Length: 460
View (cartoon, one colour):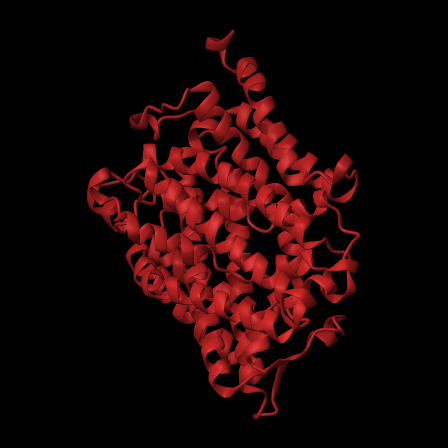
């Protein structure tokens, strides 16, 4: 590939090369990206799960706090380990995976992450469209797509208003991801502090509407049945894919301190706050999604809620689509199909927008994310084990393009971990309700050095 072709393909975002220190981004900007990245509906949803929303098993407030502390603590450690690796090397997830999976072996985790981020993009686009549909209603009276025709009788039909909202915002999200990391920062910096303030305010108002702290605690006395283990599983499972995606954001950090600050912004500040607000809302007013609650209060609160919701999910969806191009690009490049990052963003953005407009979120989100989520955690195992255990925290960055096609230690340990995660999730539940994906990740880290010794003569 010529230098001119490489410049066009790289697009200033370093899709196929490490980010030099001269191109690293300001720490404050990156922290705001992580505040916005962490602000997604699953945080509220998990709060509702812990509260037993919909009459399902839940946990007490004390147990919920422990689940949040332990779950987010685990995510913080995983994300920090991957983030420090990214910051030290400047490499994306695709590039750093070459050291533990091989040049072509890295395609395996990249394909999984590409599917996962595309599914998330389509789902978040659907979330935004659904909120606007609740706000606008259906004055046109037009139904574009009815899931009931495909056996999903409990899902509300997609109205013209919901369809158009998905389509319009899907295109907007695609445009900002098309521009790159600077556009993501530009969206996140002004929005992130505002959405946090709104979340705190609305959480307080929902608590007050429910009768205050005393009434809240009284209502929680009968919440039980989920167990701490399953609660931790829910918390970890909701964000493990985001922890892996962090590599592609942290490579722009100037220091390890910036990585830690980003981790704290997402997993100590933003996500726990959403979990708590979701829990309070589910118990106090019977609704974990505070925007749905705001829609019933007043026109002003409804407008603020819809705009804040759209803006907050905008920051997350930018990251999903941006990272998706960093996974698909290297996979295609490995088969000599070199496509510019911006074109990949446009293709994935169009596909994700169409899926989101036709009820992907409403019909498939839960099962899609759960199934792929069982495979996502173990893919980080070879990276962590290779960098910290085998290579002692040092990579020869100059060799990122000269690794063997396959490192069988990474491929085999990941496959074993992924299969175990799937089995633990669906067929052989672990004792003490231990989180399947997290346990599978630990197993992968443990067995990687064993297979490394087997497949690498220098270790014999």
